[in-house]
Length: 407
Image (cartoon, rainbow, N blue to C red; front, side, top):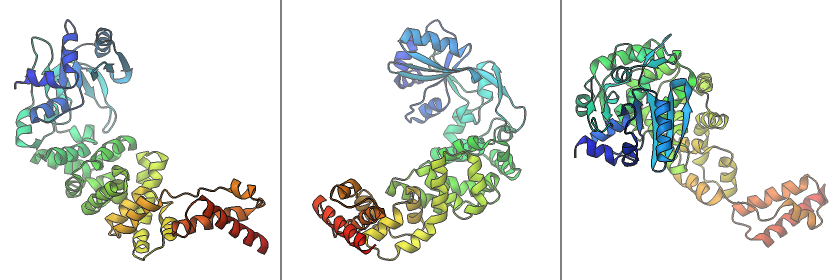
């Protein structure tokens, strides 16, 4: 099948193509082109307009009965219509006031737009106009690099202008089973050694790093991170351990932890005190930050504790306050899987059927005794000694009355 036929099969393109008639030239760009040439599925539709993308998006919304969300800063818009979701951007050139800064953009030709991109395999476009439908625009040899399995930057300053491309290169190597060419690899090493990543805001590093850590081929990506010194480029105290990160990713699948956070905890675990400031700089959501640091610090202790046979109540007390990422890390460090699986499957969701109100209604006066009675009853339920609401109530009342009498 030729490229025009493949374009028509992309999600939403059959509806979108007729609506482009008479508008400024529009091109398919980015990952969709790369994936189409690889014969892989793609769900993202990124379009470049040689003209006003916001205006074109608005006209398409009218023609297709949809709506747009405008992003004024970069002259982009997201089109959402029945059967169609697409991001449109005005073709542009970029300049950087300083290394690592967000780019200053201005309208330009398609050729200039492709020339500003990260790697040759992402610097291709396919025409969508009727006269240009299926025409591949590939001024930098991206198709040849794709076929050769090569990740290649477009210009020598690429990793300096945007150091997050270092992490993206690792991700493409792992996901697409590609390899940086010699010059790109050398410039990656140099940029990492020169602390290029320190020029980028923490949240931008976070976004690229988390995308990398969520990849299925985490082991290969982290091996390359360490080989090229990109781990030290992130922070001098960071020394990536590929097997540990891969183990945490597997542990996340077993425990239901968030894969990226578990892998990040594995990066941090060898030196959590030294790396805490770096984690803070990433700007994670507060709950995610707590989970990462707790997993990095507490997983070794969990491993030791889990090697001793524990009753249900003791296992619940040990693990119930831990984030799932800590459990994933414990598995990565060699903790026995059975007690973790038993906690997750059988113990984590156990709750009493009775409450303090039931005890008050039975005549137990309000006091700290109520809480202690309920806690002890839950402990016995976790150990299999109590089952059913009536039995819970009897046990809790007995405990509360005995404690009350002795106080």
